Image 1: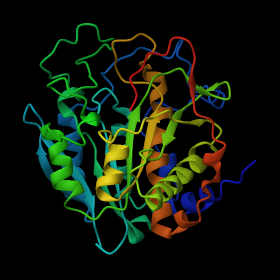
Image 2 (image 1 turned 120 degrees about the vertical axis):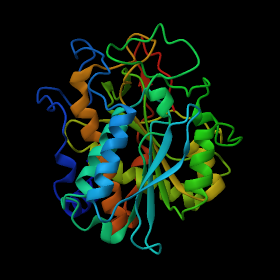
Image 3 (image 1 turned 30 degrees about the horizontal axis):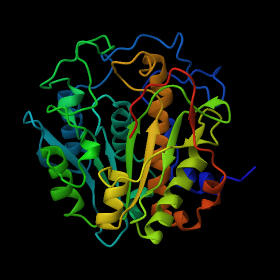
Length: 354
């Protein structure tokens, strides 16, 4: 079995950051790979998820309390909601990583994990991470979709609670298909005021997929993929694979995480590919298991899965920031990609991906 070298280095640097998650406790009985089962996993509800206003209040509160943090508005959504960028930029000469969440509004547990990561960066539990890396976080790109404030009906969506969440923005456009034309205001804000403004070395684009993807006969907790467009610089692809190696080592080794290789395409309209080509940035897609809401039965996961998926997000953000900060990412062994199986789907899988 391949030794997860990066696990010990990065989590030692990060201390206990990835272990503290304000969410439902992780059920101890679930086997590696299966995670919280779909059957009996609790009600599919939005009542436990932060609203846009609650997220903004959280960000402003931590901006006031954290000396290293700066909060910037980078643009507005179709419906006029401010889009926020969280910045920990202490030295432009240091490497910089961007974490992007909720391009799809119904994929919110990555945002919940990003908020928890921000919380811990201000508590001292982050160790020396910020001494060696600049961190940027866009915690909710598609706020209109996240609030269900859209110009099309959501009658068939499954979740109970105060609102529905949709993959698309208010104009029913998939933002993760808009990274070439950049027509939508959310995509324009990301490119004009983040990608073109800051010297970014790494990016992780955090998404959700369906519930029934599996690797080696076990349901995955998530899946990862580097840029697959032939136009990406091989050096950028290798750095992307190193980023993926850190994630794999730190999640798949936990005893509750089980990752597959995502079956993604080469279109450059997708951020994983387009941003790697346009800006020369190492990019990694992470697809968490299950969505917060959907119109297809079996795609959304209930509340009992939240702690498990939020913890996986925090582990991903913590371990990669720490590996970049202490330089251990340069030693990450990418050979696992040669044997990592591309996930397949059990019958009933109907999810939209990336």
